Image 1: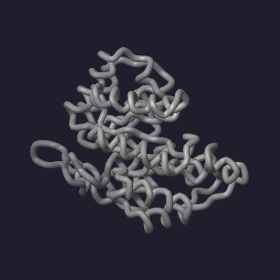
Image 2: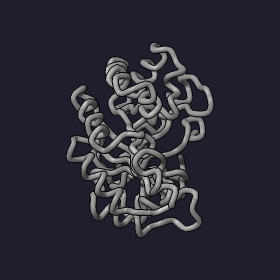
Image 3: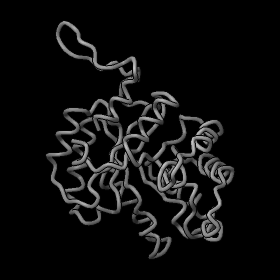
Length: 262
């Protein structure tokens, strides 16, 4: 986390001393902000209590905009515990995202997604993430899911990547074809349907490849704009690179459990 925040501050905006305190001059507006958003991951492979998250918010909360529950970890917690986590985040002006769990819910049928959205709303989630590459639905049905989330009053955040998995894109994924134009076209459709933000997965861009695809990142930013996309950063070096190359307005979702941030 320290490495990432150093990148957020920029080369010319490191910690500067004043007469009374130290101020991080990072050139970003105060929360809630639309650009320069930083999203961190909650518990994933490990169990944890409230203290690590509280420590993170109290020490670096000004730099954190979102908390993402990953891998359906909230499905293993009691409703009271999930609500306590969410209230803690909201107390520090941090939004809370469901993470990639919708695709699991949809295995039991489209009707279950409607109940899932209601449950997320009741628990206090702000954003529902929909991994469009893993859900075996056609585009029209995916658009309906986005509209359903929006109708509930929550934000919809579809996730797309350059490596396709299953569904309509199974053949394309099997061929290993990287097609940024296809990703951009789908993202535009989701945004037109009301999606608030598009998550761009790291696979095929900066993860599981020998050379980072800066050409594809640049093309996606050029076509969609920084204000409508968020990049998954699988490593602190990735987030630093994104910020140095595209500025402090880039949005990053860190694949880091809160314990690893401390």
